[in-house]
Length: 100
Image (cartoon, rainbow, N blue to C red; front, side, top):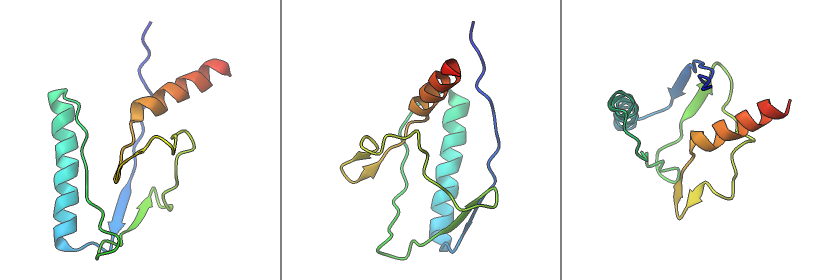
């Protein structure tokens, strides 16, 4: 039997962006939508220039974003790239659910 993962909605607000940063982020999100529609899997990236002028103020559902305790911090950095794979989080959630 296959179960369907629970679905949720995130309301994300990002303030303090330049016009170029806003356009790049919207393009990134459009790429995610496109990949989902195509049924295609790819790593995607956004260059966060924190020592430059990228200093976003972000809220998710009205709160400050927090790090996920299910993410293995030793495995997300590949050189200077941060890569988070939601499938590894889903496996851990399933394992937790099976043990309860």
